Image (cartoon, rainbow, N blue to C red; front, side, top):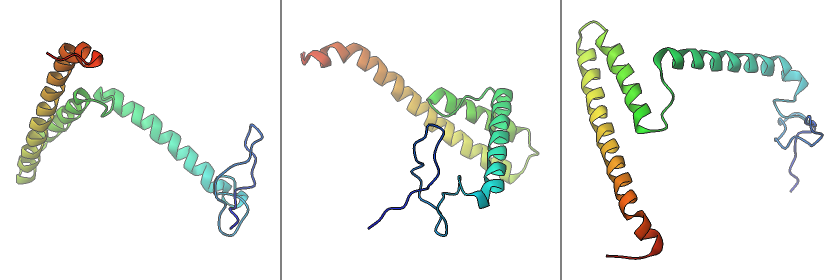
Length: 131
């Protein structure tokens, strides 16, 4: 079985390892027939990244990497929902966000307790000693 790879060369001179399009010798990124589409996709990707930075800066949102960041997202969602006109959908959304917030607080509490246990037991666990 022969494995086909794109015939394009990268900037460093090595061959592109992507699979070529079914009817061609190049992958989508290197296909001359799709150059306009690829350029537009790159442009839109750049716009998206700029928009993400602007929005994350406006909301002081840094991601979902830890419990504190998840809490911040929930705060934003709750504040935005509270600003809506009173409705059944708004009430349901607030109830759901409260439920998620309680779970997030629970996870945060477990995380803190685990860190405290590891700080206390860590040296003993590493040396294999037990009390």
